[in-house]
Length: 491
Picture 1: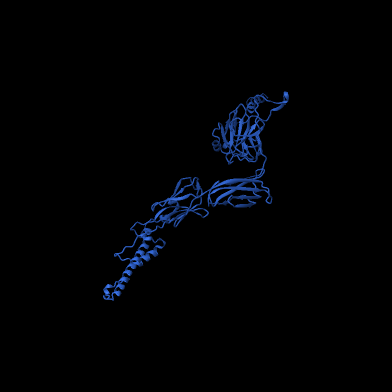
Picture 2: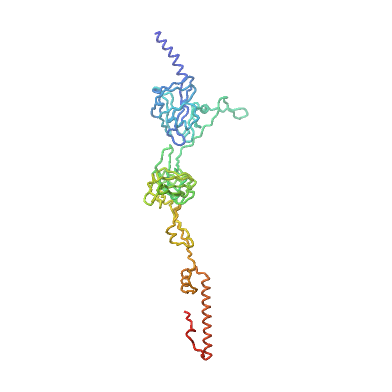
């Protein structure tokens, strides 16, 4: 009997103070962080006692609907009046909250973003348990749920720090003299206004890039949720793309491809009708889509020993080249998914990757996934021939390669001036003049007509002189006979 009393006394001395002075409670819950939930959810646990709390990893569990071990079954201790964090990935938590002063413990954590129950269990006994619903707040808005007395409020996260002031016991309003009102409160009581929770509603959201390239297909999707934030795939979805096109999608919740043909800014809108045959819009969303021209060019190519291809992005935005095609003279290369050229930057693609030969570089095109030719290389530039140079030699022998943009192949055909044909005598050939005039077409110059006029005047003068001489001989009785040597054959 004496031994029993001694054992009971030792139990009272050593165990009871520990149980009373070490008590763990859940004080903060981040169940629906802004953005991705995986590995970003966490709960804060506080030791509100005056003694450290030793955690036996083989006995303690975290429960979020299923029971999970803590920290890979490694024991740890929580100092009095201190916090620790349970999270799905402590490295992610510490990256999100670099100023956290305490200990972060790994466990499996999958918290429902609409409602749930989280518990701490020691050797089968529930130490603390908290139920939450999204109507309390902190639903993907950057806030967390924090314990305030016996209540929970939504506020900015404070992992490892004291929670918001106690608002469970609100100050009472009493009548004062003069018919006015006064607040009765203790010096330590602070009133924190309760966050108003918006009533549940149906919402829809457009999911798309807001900067796209004209003529290139891009992915468009949407997320529509009901009153309990459940995904809605039924009803009627009407899209308007702001470029004169619209699309109606009934009874489905899938993505699709769209393409703007011209650069500009377009307002894309989505209207959701829960009742397919109804006329009332239950939710809408809109997004401004900036459409820019394709500004990726082939800025240079390599040599016979290194036939690389250099691409340049001349736009002010980064451009994704996923599944674009480089088409050479004999071979083609599909640019892998996820390839991006930053604004104003260049990338070189090695022949080791493309398997292109130098012969392929003689005619290259960049082709979008939708089959549109974006740019090519090279274009042909035919220079103007020198004064004494044969034009055909210039065209056949001197071809300069240079980049081209937007598939516009430029060819310059110079006007070739052959000059005036020279002869070895002073005889003016009228046939040559006529031929020259016919060849020149509308370009025949006034000096040619001047020569023709001179010829006409000269012939008229010769004819007049001969005519006078003939009549003179006739008047003189033909005393001097006509000699054949006196006759000139003019034509």
